[in-house]
Amino acid sequence: MSLHPVILCGGNGSRLWPLSRDQHPKQLLALLSGRTLLQDTALRLETVPEVAPPVIVGNREYRFLIAEQMREIGRMPCTLLLEPEGRNTAPALTLAALRVLATDPEAVLLAMPADHAVQNEEAFRAAVTGALPKALAGRLVTFGVVPDRAETGYGYIRRGADDEIQEFIEKPDAERAQALAASGDCLWNSGVFLVAARVWLQELGRHRPDILAACERAFGHSREDGDFVHIDSTFRTCPGESIDYAVMEHTAVGSVVPLAAGWSDVGAFGALWDLGARDADGNVARGDVVALDAHDNLLIAEGRLLAALGVRDLIVIETKDAVLVADRRSSQSVKDLVARLKDRGRRECLTPSRVWRPWGFYETVDHGPRFQVKRLMVRPGAALSLQMHHHRAEHWVVVRGTARITRGDEEFLLSENQSAYIPLGVRHRLDNPGLIPLEIIEVQSGSYLGEDDIVRFADRYRREETGAG
Image (tube, rainbow, N blue to C red):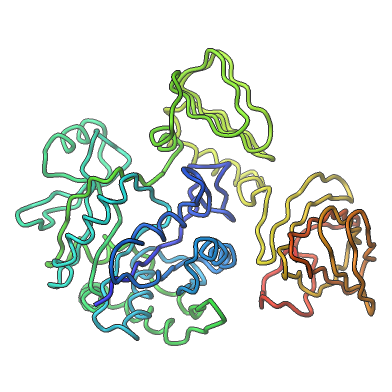
């Protein structure tokens, strides 16, 4: 028997805008430490014996960034299952079970959302190892967080004798939350599950055979590409359902095990204030922040000086393209603000100022009618695709490193302070043959500067979608 961590890497964290965006969700951000939430999750079981490499189930749009983050912490190779479209946690866990059972018929899966935080990881590991006998005996185990307050933002699980699940309780109002937290037999629903893979598939087949059939069909036609397993597009027809709703609320073999490990789903900025290191005035500050006569604020600056004077209980988040100012008690409502921005077609809720690609990243420095200025970083040995644009020309200036330029039939090198012009309609490629990161300033000019104005002729990363590089 091996324990296989299954990291559920979906979701976008709209309550953490503008740090989190649709195209750069919260699990890929370093919100609480020097590592991202995904990286912390992948390392959570590193001292547990007989733990297999993680299986990560996520959106294909984030595949290169997920892989890079796993390489940074030494967790590659691992299995990256790429969904063509998110269908919630029950199908995601099912894909992982089908993959793991192909090589380990006795596998036990620990399903963990990639965007949660655990302060006491030793206690988390102890809870997991303590629950293993139940999973090996055929129980479907979920972990219920011991509540330390009345919380309306979480669902609850009522625990019976021998850790049996008595009932699931939806997110309560304030009065009922107080009663549930004080009852002694109700736990927060953590969304973490420990199950034998074959038992999960058996119970899913009993309660939701339609989900099982759809996952088996899509997984059976999956395609492997280097580090990635692309799940077939028929997965889009799979019913979207959570693990709780699909199986746990109906099964007769469900158990809930108490978890007291400083768990948080990092669902809103209030959680960052709760988990952060507060100064003598109760402020949690990150970045270039100066506070005077300010108390109990969350202050995050990504690029500029953030100065706070005479304010209390605020959330102030500064990024390169957006600033959020909110009452700390309104942190759960940030998602409503994001919905308003989407209704108005604002790109700031979709893309971050820094956009990651398999070769590095780009970020917009300035833009206006018929021009755009970007900063590009290309990793050593990496290359943009061989491409052409219909509506824009580009001028590249090397700031740091060495660039190899393909322009039409030419190929040449540029070093620091040298530049090259790429006319409209000319095939071109930029790559980094050096040993240090290549930094480029790119000036675009033309009638249309959208990221979909690109024709790829060759791409070492086998990308099909449009986008820079």
